[in-house]
Image (cartoon, rainbow, N blue to C red; front, side):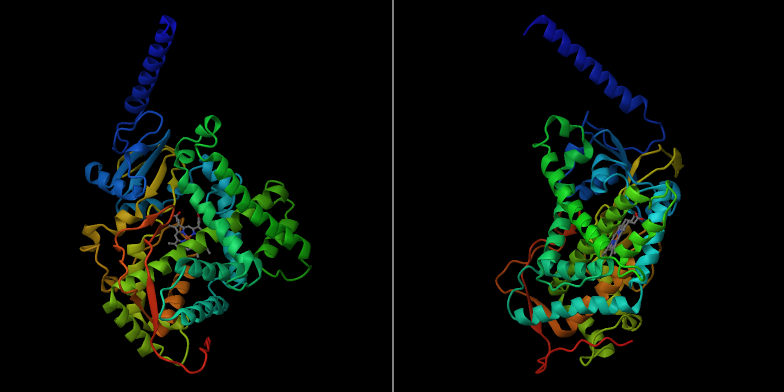
Length: 497
Ligand code: HEM
């Protein structure tokens, strides 16, 4: 090696190390929350269990405290492992930003829509969407009918498969949940086997996988310029293009088939709002409007389908492995609903045990174990900790849901613990009531008719273990649904007013 090269390498290493030490020790404010020492370039990413990152954070919080800092590549991030602090922080608009990171901007075609936008765009898009989703059923009786149509498909399918292990349970549930959303957003209802519906689900699932399979694009996006294939960039871009293309095609079809007068669905309403908008700075104006519409449609599908479907799959696993809880649930169903009619949302008021089961399933499932990133909108203080503008913030929902100080015995499935109430935050899930309604109607309808039992001689997965991507799903399991009563006539799903 020539002397010149040696000197060059030495100088580069010296400058790099000095810069790193300066960054880490001197530019860090003395009241910045503590955390593990990050490595150059990749931060703490290589120190966590890549499969269960939230468990690594939970372990670290025992050393560094309920509010701790980590570094994801060059990004500063905080992890909140305490329910009170998380509620307080996310109830404060100062922390209602979203990280404007590379992968976020690619997924939303800029910083558009509801999920990743900020400020006036977020407010306008969220307000418009909630108002117009209500026109097409959100939070109304008609939503119950839409959900029940899809519940009926699941009951029919389970009846066909009764007594045998259920194939593709999670996919079936995903298609059923997605179909209700699809009807509200784009006006059509498909059969469960429809290729269009399947293509939409594939595209949403590929999108979710794309986020988690390529962590380097999240923490070190610059790597795509050097190693586009190895870093996963080429594949990521392909998946994202396909997903955005799907939404673009759906919107184009609407533009061609839309008529004057009443909008047929959410997309029509949005297109009409765009036509009315003359303010060139509005997020509904022309090109900006189209980008936002595509992102909103993506947010609703991505936010609403897999979350609910994975929670339902966990429900079957938890109830299959806790026959006692399943029997109590069925007893309440028999007492309040009986066998002669289908469940209706009004039944919820008289079914505290069922509600407790749903809450306990949601706690133990923690389907979005780290929640969705927030970010600090200004330099600020929180519980005497200094938090610089732009810091990414995770609420470790899994740690909160499994905190022994809060729950006593968090690893046990124990619905009775939920016979009390909880609070709310500001940047909160707009689909919460739809998700709760869906979980109630699916669970009561399924367990009204069937009992879930494990397939004999097949291993049952540990319910505390999971298959993780962006979502936390159960490990594969085999379930047999046994019919509870033999009906000679086909099931009639009637929805009372
Ligand atoms: C079990 C079901 C669900 C779970 C566990 C869930 C969870 C979450 C979480 C943790 C957030 C982040 C809130 C925050 O920023 O602090 C969120 C946001 C969001 N969810 Fe859900 N969700 C569910 C169902 C739904 C449904 C059914 C829809 C739509 C129809 C939906 C649409 C959204 C949207 C658009 C956001 C972004 C809100 C914003 O940034 O202002 N979600 N959800």
